[in-house]
Image 1: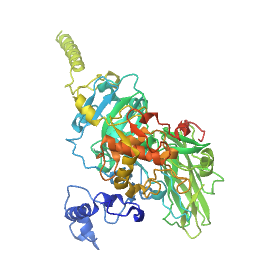
Image 2: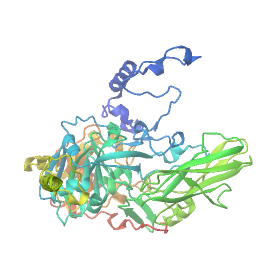
Image 3: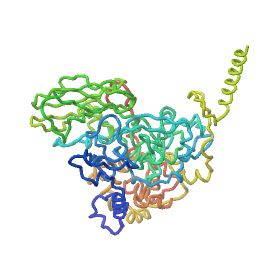
Image 4: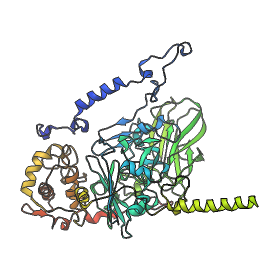
Length: 408
Length: 192
């Protein structure tokens, strides 16, 4: 297919076209017509109290009035942060980043191999993993390339940093499997490899495996979604999302890192003085106001400023709000429970007089790290932008009620 | 007296039960504290050496994992034209997808193999597992060595007559190698 095209005139190749789009699209359309939920075909009634409603169903539906969606490019899809409430991201709105599409995997045929510096190399199927003692935790997962801006200011939280989402992940602790295989003392790194067409790999310190890594087979109570790594994925709380390898098929224990493509040519950042930072795993503390935010509009009067804050190093200690462009700061209220390495919702009730001003949020985590301005962060990285950008994000409230993004 | 005997029986039974549950994996009545978990549960299967050999495709920076084989710049160029140029450009400098060859006049800021990749082994590892995008895993070791040789040559790291194999790939010094430093961020107030 590719060789028939003149490479010099070829535009950036669309992944969906490459993956054989037409047939796939038709089958998806046929599928959705068959399974279209009742509520999407029946128009809303003038008076729903006078007609019996739809019958019970085998699976829940979304209201046709709530058409909430991710936004997608060829390689990623972003969570609509400004349309969500509470602390959990619905599984079908969890952000997605794939390196060669979403594989279709039969759990009966998929195995996880653990080998290398171990006493007993072992393979596990999904059913084997489910027999081990299980663990659940609510934690965020964020891509380390998660900051975008736009000069016009017309950019939503979804587009600025929608590559972060939060789920309850359930699975088996990796430490349990380490013990099962008998990991050698001299093992310091392990390779995690996915069963997708990219056969994607990352090197991870063994220490993280013993501490809190999970092989997750469930997300928000049901099997992990295919886009999130079905039948199971690695989950590394607080670490950059790329390392939580999806469709996990192999773990190899080693005494040194592997320097894979995703930890050398990608997911590394230029930090000034000609240096490139490698193995920058932890996601620093961050927050963003999700209401008010572009493209929403506001009216003068009472506004409950809302947003989320999170840190890969621990719990959120505090979130401060400025309603005067950063001159003064006041504490926001944090919604309990405030969890370790988890999105935490904050609120700040404020009366807007209607004159133009900028509102900002600033997170501090339990280690004392305070979210920096873009200017300070850029300065600390020798003027370079790239991965691990977590700056304070501002919104300008125009007197006509328009809300525009403002970098700090 | 009867009460006393019943008491003894209960004590005896509960002790026996505790012993039983410690020795048996099938006991589902007892909740164990985490520090008393058995070292092994016995779930899963031992992996055969054959199985490991089939799946263990990774190549480390020190060359561990490289399969026997070799490749040339000329052969690499031929394969590149047919299988890679559509996405990466006719000489690797143009794109539209990742630019692979550094050229200060055409793509000075691009993170290419020549100015950004710290290890030559990563080229081999990545091509053999993930490329070509629409036919991943389809190239033979000799083809992957040849493509690696061609890309190193275009980046002016080896000359046109070099033969790249499992013995010499890890020894190639990449221009960006000394730029890489480990993460120096720590917890606490400092912004890095």
